[in-house]
Image 1 (cartoon, rainbow, N blue to C red):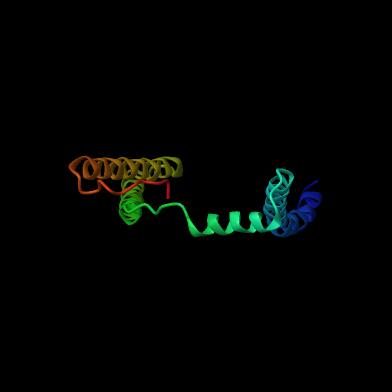
Image 2: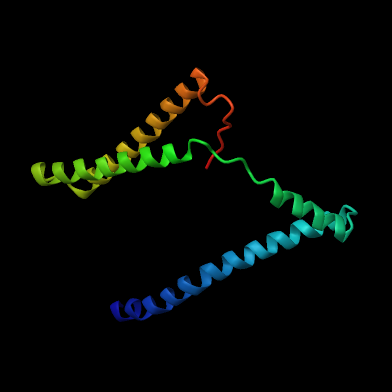
Length: 135
């Protein structure tokens, strides 16, 4: 039984290495094709469809002006979580699950800190013109 499983490991490795990216590429191409076919079915000419997609590329989603702040706070809290988890693991001999939980807890605290800082900036008017998107 073990030899059967050991023999299947390379097969699954090859399938997952080449199959999943292939499926993703196929799905993206198929979704684009389906969207364009629906636009043509609605009666748009090919030139109108090209102009539609050109306009979509010219007006990208607005950037989050606080994006760098978010990632900075998250990486600081992530690093602090790993640091404190390693210290506690060495000192009190915690298991890996507690270490992982502590890192996730610090990441959550980082998100909450980011939210409070941005909320304060928007309410005070320093970020009044900034639209926040999910970047």
